Length: 140
Image 1 (tube, rainbow, N blue to C red):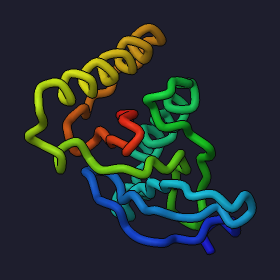
Image 2: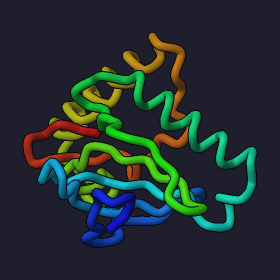
Image 3: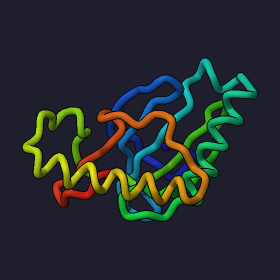
């Protein structure tokens, strides 16, 4: 049990700084996504601080097409960000798309970027692998 509250179900993917897991918050009985700062970066104060800043920035965002941040914590030497689990597929796995569907998704992405930019937040790693598209057609 991670942090005394989260049960890891599976690994969803890895990135430059972290690993993302599908998990369950056993206290609230809801699915979550947990991003763990990779071990080789946890002991580097600058990188750990950047990870914490990422969590603080995400916590400020409240938009229907941006995953909500639930928690940030440290367990042992590892740092974790707990966020809303988006049940869907990465945009990259859906390509190519009919132009009508692509346009609808693109407009949702632009709306969420405009919102983030209005708060002074820049994404820095926007790519089809980082956009989740749910069956309800909400892109995250």
